[in-house]
Image (cartoon, rainbow, N blue to C red; front, top):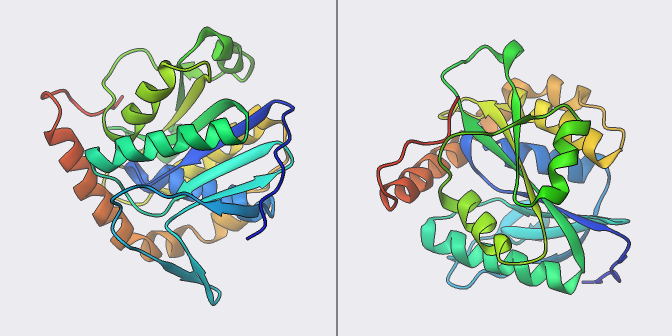
Length: 240
């Protein structure tokens, strides 16, 4: 597989993986296909069970990296337990060193008791003050109170010890079902931050199909999230 030479001019990494509502999975997958990004490598996570996917007759690893110009993406099609979440976070860190990543944007879902899609909101959390202006300039509400666990916490914990800042975008979503509508909000917000044009008509036209196609992944994700939370102190999940 051909590996592209990294562009060191403010390289940005977008990270997505199965979480509440599959927001990260939907958002990052759509960005990859819409921008026609090129796969540059597969990410190895030690002790991850052997898993392969087939798409259009092509065999794909479960965790892949893509790029276009100075935008890099890592997407996982498998959820992680707490142990593998830490291994995944370390693998992301190694990737960042290799491609001279300057900042990370992570897309995830925030469980909410408000299921009215027309009022769904998105919140931001920055690991370093240098990214606070992104929230202000894009009118993104700051995530102020709650708890973070699992893969989200693993990534933030690893990068808080480095010079690479992380911005997390949490879209309000349904915690137990695939939520493409919440993903659209995340996609639109991400496009503003990256200053790119993204049309969401395609995902809007396939919302019902996406829910059906990803039911099994949602069930696996729920089990992984429950396992992650059980290993923490009895803190509530992130919600608003």
